[in-house]
Length: 303
Ligand SMILES: N[C@H](CCC[C@H](N)C(=O)O)C(=O)O
Image (cartoon, rainbow, N blue to C red):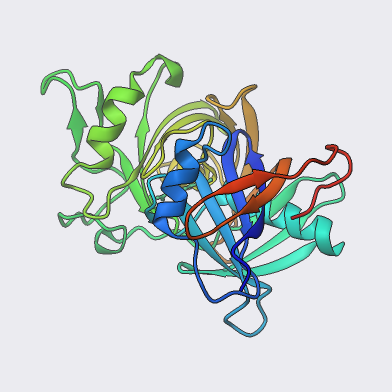
C-alpha cells in the first residue's frame, strides 16, 4: 500500500476542510496525522473528511470525519458539500449517497454549483443529544454563563443533528460576544458528556437568522453547517421562524448564506450552500506529512 494519498484543501463558507481520498485502503487517517496537519499553517483545518470505500449497499462512499484536535465528529455539513464537489468534478455525477457513523446522507450538486445535503432528522431527546441531566423539554434548558442575576448567555435550545448542539438566542450582533472565552467553557460544560458545538443565533426576520459558532474539537471556525441546521430547526421549533430559513454566517469572510429547510413531510433537514476547492496535494494518512501539487488552479479541481 502506497504511503501517500491524494487530498484537497477546500472550504465551505470559510470552514476549512481537508478532503482525503482513502478509497482502496483499509487504514484510517490517524488522530496524529490530523494534529500534525493542523499544526502547519498551510494545512491548518477545521475538519478532515476522509472518503473510504462504501460499506453499505447503495452508498457511494463511507466518510470518516475528524476534528482538528484529532477527535471524531459524527456530522459536518460544510465538509459534506466539499466532498460532493470533489466527487462531482471527478465523476461528472451530481447525486451521491454517503454513509457516516451517524447514518446515511443524500446530497446533490445543482446546475448553479451550489450543493444540497440532506442532513437527516433532528434529535431532541435529552439522553440522545446527549445531556447529563434529564430535561423533558430541550427547546429551552436551564444553563447559563455570567453573573447569576444577569447572565450573558442563558437558556439554550439543545438538540443533535448527528452531533450535539446548543443554540443560545441573543438580541444583539453575534460578533459582539466574547465567544473565544465562553466557547470552551460551554463546549466542556458538565451538561454535555460528549461536549457540544456552541452557537450564538440572532433572529433577524421570520425567515432569517445570523449565527456564529464555537465548534467542539475545532474552536472558533469561520462557519459550521450542522450548527446552521441546528439553529434553523431550533428557531422553527420555538416559533421564532418558519421552517425555511436563510442563515447568515457572520464569522465567514465575507459573511455567507446557507439555506436551510426543515421539511414538513419527512422531518428531514436540507442544507444548501457553496463549496470551494483551493489546492490539492498528497499526504501520508499515518503521519500527516504532506506536499502540494504544482498545478495551475484552473487545471485541477479534483482529488
Ligand atoms: N464544521 C462542521 C461541524 C463539525 C462538527 C464538529 N465540530 C463536532 O461535532 O465535533 C459542519 O459544517 O457541520
